[in-house]
Length: 316
Image 1 (spheres, rainbow, N blue to C red):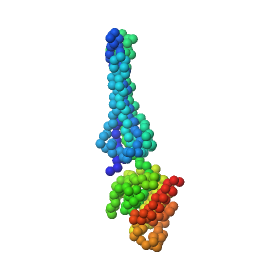
Image 2 (cartoon, rainbow, N blue to C red):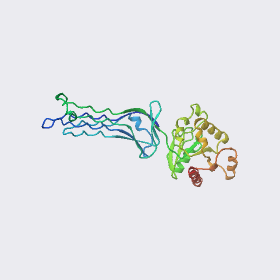
Image 3 (cartoon, rainbow, N blue to C red):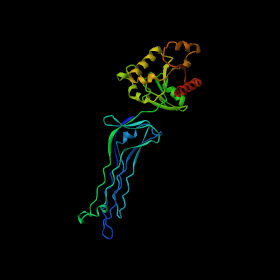
């Protein structure tokens, strides 16, 4: 199951208290406490979802240690670095953006550690009553909010359930998307890399997705970075025009931005038809597509041509 939003608490470490020590000559020599560790988010191409936030809800950096004798500073608390997938946004509890991580290796502090407190060495000019005085360390910052993931993609696959999207994703990339002859085989976005492109297979859209049916609404946000829409329609469909129009209508309601992108109409399962039948089937669909492609997972040449079209339109 794809975990794409989690509620978490992040707390930086507290600063260590100042030390209370005396030198051999009796003078105060307590050092400054160590600074508390800070909390960072770091983007990583090797993390794919937010499932770590399902098992752990609190992330706390180390506290700084107390100042020591001879005016030595206590050890600083270790920073806490949390690696997150791209693109991850930290939101406050009201849903306002705090920070967005978009690049591999990008590191952003989200909670700063508290400063170490002063030891009694720094109060040596006072009266005898102040010789044991020290300052406590500052409190580390606490942040409560949500991490939200939006996956990155170059090409997004849309279409009715079982239009052949998952099978094509497998053929293009050797990915392991589930394939079965029943609705909603794809229960979450499938990601694969092929030809240097990131391909995303969205869960099947159906009529009424905008009213809560099907699986499309929740995951549509993951398509926002796409450069191209591959619209899959099965040549086996009894009414391919109706299938095409239904998906376009649902996209208009859910994410009209996708309708502004270049579109390839991908007609699947061409192996079930004679060559002379294919053009007749294609004429049954009036679309806004840049091109119409006939493909079959059993025809390697057809899906490699499709991949080349993905590269061409994604590079524009």
